[in-house]
Image 1 (tube, helix red, strand yellow):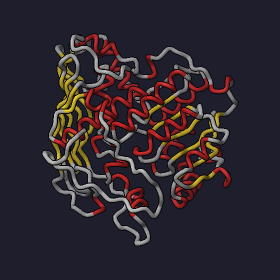
Image 2: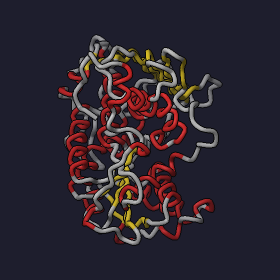
Image 3: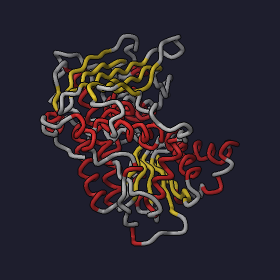
Image 4: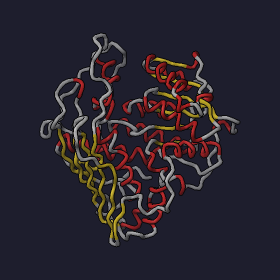
Length: 428
């Protein structure tokens, strides 16, 4: 997909057909296998051995018999070892645990653990750390010529996403496979509905709607007195903007990515509002918002309304996660036009597609640029809500905003910026 905004003269129908990052089912190019050969079994390594990382291993090994997981990296040894035990001891993992072969000398701990892992003899790497690290880790993986399963989102600030985009272009040139954790792209219901919509099933698209309303994600409710700021913020990463991106980036990306995917491109501008209604002001809840509402405008005038909201855990609340497109002939929730019986587990299907793409047994898949654009789309909404400004795609692509710390270490002090207030906070 293009990284610059398209002409405003694009028609609704032509915008639908513009996307070069459609579902894997629509790709026809076969990949060049790294190092020019296909091994009997691919060797995989994991960076980020938390809940997402360990489940990625299970889904990957469930989706293909042609892979072994042989290396792992995390900044916390207790996380790595406890989740490795879970893989080996949890009864429901019985079918895959024999292919988890992570020897002690292939377990790397520390802020440079990902670099050590990438020097091992692996073919594919899973990137499952908190998203603040995604640009640096993805860039390093592509420079090491590894195929990648990359959890979403692909960064938390414009500087990081541009860094990711540069590596994405290189991954395409090297014909490396990149599969994202935006699993709807591998859900047959979405893929088949997209095909029907592109064939005119609901006519010309006039508007879209995206929702994620649910409960918050809280990893740590108590801070150990031995944890310095940086250690604490890593263990409670979902509450801090620099490492999480806020809910609209980290969670709502799934729905906004569907909008970009189905519409065939990114928006040209956004106006958003948001704030904190119930999240207390203590460190457990960090400096993210608990709701953001955004109005996106695409190049052809199509508008998308998006809304994400987290309510207190345990509350009896309204919940909604999904998408809707309205057209001149009807509307669709983006998965209702599929053939009966089309549903398969997309979390497993994305890993099957990953292995098939690497081995050349299936279509070539590289979603790096497409999901990077969706990540920047979400960041635009966050920054508009934080600042009260209208944010354009060009502004986001040229922004100097870089949230990443300049030093890393377990004992470092890391001050938390205040909760953003429109009129005071400025996007630049």
